[in-house]
Length: 262
Image (cartoon, rainbow, N blue to C red; front, top):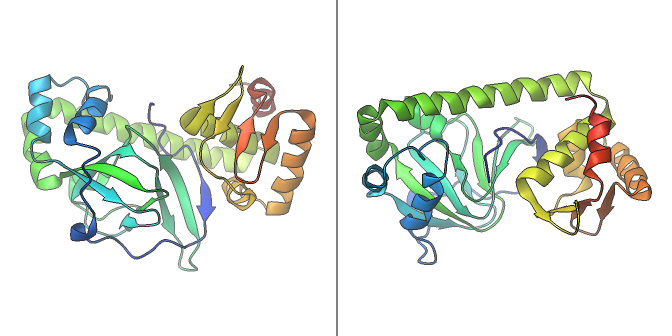
């Protein structure tokens, strides 16, 4: 699954536990460094490396398991690790002084995070929290930077990744200003379906993790009542289906028409 930087913008209540110290992340034998190697071999960032180069890069890497709700790092923490998601889901966001958490992105299997602070050695620019039990390939900055110096083409690819994220941020900002609620919500749902969807019969796609109306409302920047009203209308019209915990896209073509011209 290709990464979609900053493709989500929604909020969760601040229920995460304290940050996980390095020693409290637990190794797990169900996943190995070779699993992370397989993901990175297909990733735009490092997929151009030879098998031997990738093996050298990952020789000091390790696999860690983190529980649901654990915080890997907070905004302002030292940036000393690169992560690859082997299983589970990781939210990337930040928290206001009032305790409201804004999530910019939700990352799943094969996606990479933590590279911004890893490059410059400065503080983390966002929080990272496990939304479910997750297994992560971890590579320390002390091991990554010497490799980067020997392979400047990797640095160029990292710059391209960062540029892509800047474009997503700009697009999200424009959407919040210029798009009406139906278009904004339709766009977010389609992005969720694209990056975290389970294909079902025909063109239908079920979003694989629970998603509350309050989370969707915070994504769209409106009240829960407004989202509830719109989702009920879409369900009646056959665009979506909802159960207690999950949402399914039934008619993506009609949702795309709500967004307008590409």
